[in-house]
Image 1: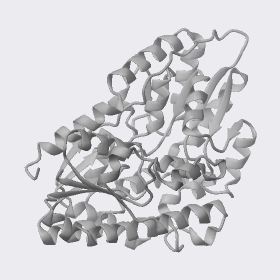
Image 2 (image 1 turned 90 degrees about the vertical axis):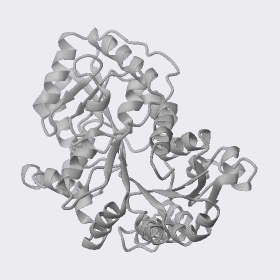
Image 3 (image 1 turned 60 degrees about the horizontal axis):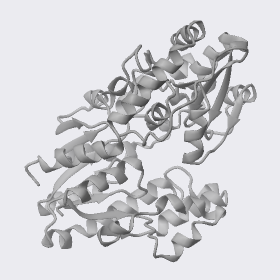
Length: 414
């Protein structure tokens, strides 16, 4: 029990990291914002449909002795979002904005380190935007700093996405990452500079760090795991019906969605497109007009997402800048072949032309060409889908957790 993991909101990858550390006796403590356990009142309340957001904060009973939580700001954010009090969650400035949630959590974690070191703590594992104060304190008292960059480096993002303002100006308002202040970007660089080792989940994310203007610590690539494969897909013949194409993700040009819409438009009546995801902004006319032409579902639960994938023929994830893309692994686990770009974890997971397809980012023609191949030879849907599901079976989340534990235990600090 030597490593403290700090993550304000907890997601699939951070939870599976903790699972791996616990299994290998490497976890000192988990610091998060909201932690709900089966023996608590909040766990019972989370069964109420109006409080379903709390359900994903439920943790295993075995984690309780290791978990510390401080929930005021995250509860405030969830409540303000539910009540549509936008001014309270406004980017960087709202009292309960996600930036404030991360900053407060980071400072709380930092204040706890000196006492934790006396109890045997050797290192801290923290995530982008929530690591600066933690790392600064850790350095002062002789703790090692392990950094997790879940999405590509911001300077690279700006270089790759800037041209979208010229190529697709009608979609530029959805590129909200350009709204980050100079101070926030400076903090990202300071976090990286303090790291003793950096973990990323894809070769693409590692490559984006080449744009960092200084020298960085060692970068280790450990791809995330796949959801458990629970059932085989029923591959329906493509006779007398349209090809069912699916996209799931944030509705932003960072996801390359204009190129998907363009490809589908050129394919005409041959395909049926379903879009699942929240709008990044409400006032993008190009996005709103495109959604009117297709089947748009603003939100689904995780179980519903997997079921939705299971019911479609092919999943398209045309992202222009993505640290990983968990929807890729989710789709493959459901036996649905994936078309994605070279700026995702796709190249780390997919054998192009065998269990999916890798296309150049920013090319509607490339997407259309693959879909044309499918329409010409629809039997490859089953061939590729089964191969994708076989790949998923080789790398469940438990493999990621163990690989992370192995990588961390091999570091000199532990």
